[in-house]
Image 1 (tube, rainbow, N blue to C red):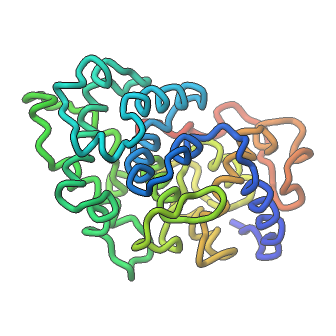
Image 2 (tube, rainbow, N blue to C red; image 1 turned 60 degrees about the vertical axis):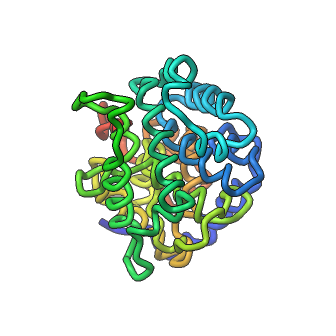
Length: 298
């Protein structure tokens, strides 16, 4: 595969700067930004990222409903959280296939993270290596240890526990889209991302892989893969690292919103006529089922 040439960097950087100013776009991070305390942003961020699947309007509605119950300080809410006390509020919520018990279990896991390590970052870095190529192994450890907490008081002895959806693992082929999105919010710092965490390097982040990043990524020849998963997410990140080795996924927000605005010519007869990266992209001829849509269950 012929890769996107290094000469494309000024166009990518221009696109990044343009979208860095766009605080009017509907995006879950805007819900997290409402909180000013880093502890609240860390907790609200994981809850918001966990629900970031499906249509944007539905995602924002579910995030708003959950954060409304959590109140002005999500961190304090979690530290005092008791599942039985919220069976009729959080326990009755539904977001696509995520049910109330799954959200109760998510918050219960976060509480145990805070009790054990003081913060979600503290829990994450127990499996993090600063010399690793990326956060893949750290994500594997994070999800494995999170799901090892005792959840019997929520699920009883049921074997099927939907909270596992919130903690995917690269070893299973998952792109870990929502966890990578959360890491982007927490680790990077600019006018978009929050930079709450200090122990993880932005250079090690992996792009949150969704349908929009796949479409734009294939147009820009950022990946040779056709099926979504960890391998595709890692390859797109590796390609972007050629343009900014210190902060490769700074381009995620802008590339994703180009796709969301349907400016990329991936499936349109217009080709790249409206694409802000026209001249660099190589739109793929329109075909039915051009690629397998990435499963939100990852």
